[in-house]
Image (cartoon, rainbow, N blue to C red; front, top):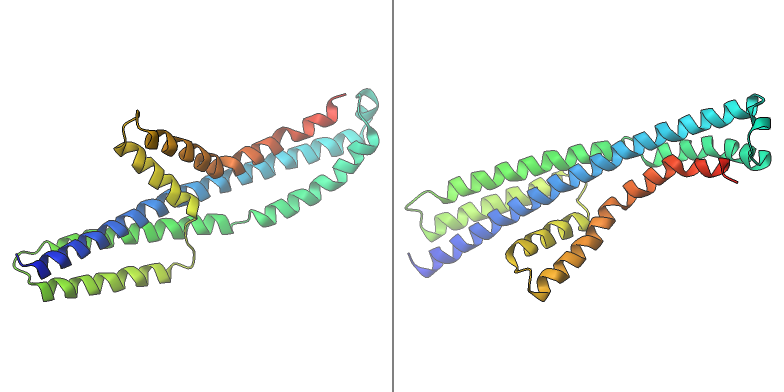
Length: 210
């Protein structure tokens, strides 16, 4: 095998790995976005139940039996429905659509990577033929990305990158602990919306505390 052929084979393998990596990152991104969407919908349900509860208390004589500040309670009862509407608009079905698009594109890229492996594995191809395969699949890869109007977030790439690095490092190495620390930060960035939304579920409880 001459040097030209070997060089193109390296390029083909690099392109295939790039497709696989992008596919994996987008699968992870789709799961993250879909999970955030479900938590957001549950948040709307919990806040709506709180709004109903507050309205019921204000409409009956329960308010006189509870140790609450009526003025604050009334203010929250007015603000909470508005907050729910704004929150619902922000966390609308767009997130669910984005998750679907990311997952669909991830499946396309994984299939494309498999096709590239099959095409480049044919024996007897010279450097020019392999280069033609590389150009074709490089264009297909670019077209697939361009046809997807959304992209994964940097945090999805960082999460996969640090996870892979930890798998290849020794726990006694400083790099292993650095990757662990960075992965912890990235993990919090992935989950901070869930933590914040779940906090909303129980936040109105403070209205009943002295």
